[in-house]
Image (tube, rainbow, N blue to C red; front, side, top):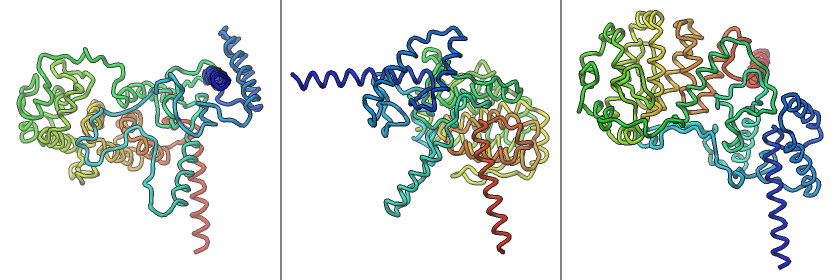
Length: 439
């Protein structure tokens, strides 16, 4: 009886502690420190000014203080700064998962690790090397933690999220005071980020009943050659054989792109149907459909003056007629929407490893070589954030930051990340200068 009574009392204290931690997280305080007193008082005054109810916050703080002094030195369950494990609290469901379709790995030869934390291959060199790699990863994740009060923090961009999904809430923290940014570029990026996040998270608000059609799996049948596109009435092999190189036809006909690169969202062609989950699964298993998708990709690359160098890696380069085709892209900016659709389709239908090479190509052309200036904004707002692999997306943004001028107008990552990269670039320059002086 005594053991059961002590066990129940211990569980009761744990439940109180978990409740206190949850309330403190809503306030933005994950662990009480004496240095946080002024910050808590500031948020308390903001809450009073906004006429919010602060009774729960005060109760949670004092109960948490009491539990902290009572159990000094023990770990607090669910606290990301004190817990060694990353297990969610009881009753909590992980949120904010960004994953491609469930069957993405079926056909992709080199599938990208979509929306996962950056990892490194473990070298079999002993336990010391593994510990060094783990410490480097932990320091890297700490560097990438961005506070919501950052002036260029975007709640729709998960590129810099390093904590686990359940430690973040979908709603903005009401206790944090975020400065308002009256920046046209940042506001435009924020609007685009909402759409790209919806894509990367596999359209979480999409209703399954919305995807009902009389024709069963029309996109898959089209790619298998069992039906024609609508309203053009063209077979997939005709697109690849006859339309290849017909640039005027590809430019001024606007009803074919939804069939060549279908998505899970509706497009401008009302006779084209969005992809369904079952259709994606069957598409990834069908070799004929996947081969035809690769041909469609080559067709559009040729239209844009780009050539696919390596089928395995997705590396691309300029084609022979790149000058003519680049001028066409600069004149007709609706191709920016087409390229965004192509990148989304590659990630949805098992060719996610083709995304980063194509985006890197456009970054080099726009920021380094000075070409395609009417495409540059779409590259930074949409193309980069269509890449599912978070590690590659970060490297692409870092490449864009290092080649963007002027850098103080770069709005596609938080200020904290920009300062880290600037410091690293300065250190590299100092090391290179020292090496040059030695020689």
